[in-house]
Length: 212
Ligand SMILES: C[S@@+](CC[C@H](N)C(=O)[O-])C[C@H]1O[C@@H](n2cnc3c(N)ncnc32)[C@H](O)[C@@H]1O
Figure (cartoon, helix red, strand yellow):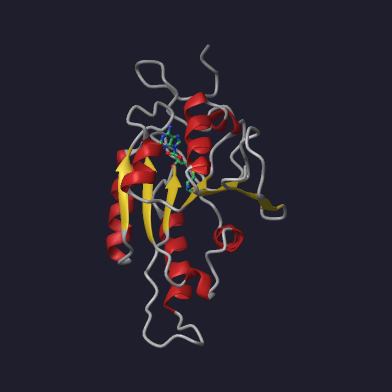
């Protein structure tokens, strides 16, 4: 059944990912692919919760690849990469000649216009991200397999509605990522089928991993 306050395309599919919410907490939207941006303080807290903002030796040799599943115009992912790469660039106290590999990203969104904006922004800010137009609600190309075996993603950020998190496709994606050893950080809403590994209640962040 079509909802009174939702925007639909000619086939009757909802264009607005948040059409089941009757409010927009903050951010902005458009008719094509409205989205709500994660605040900068939340981005920093997510980096901390995922252990990405320390310059410990444990991170020294690791290649970090962060995916934003539903990346919008890429602002969150670009800011997150710039943030964590300042820590990776910092010289560890006992390092001699061991530069840390810079973190890179994978941004996925079904809006071509938002991905186009993301490409421009990452080029401008010289941040390395592979952007992809893809509808993970349909998940026709087995995105988990690609993220694990092609992109070698290590961390995933997710800001989606409860209704989307409950979809069988999104369920399989998030469970598959955790099983594959990826750390998944959910903002505001989180999947009820996964057990939290840790959380930051104040910032509404929950992390899931292989133990989830
Ligand atoms: C709440 S916004 C989050 C944007 C960004 N991740 C952030 O935290 O600032 C959700 C994003 O998911 C995208 N999205 C929603 N459903 C999607 C789907 N089925 N496939 C791909 N992207 C989707 C929307 O276009 C939107 O950009």
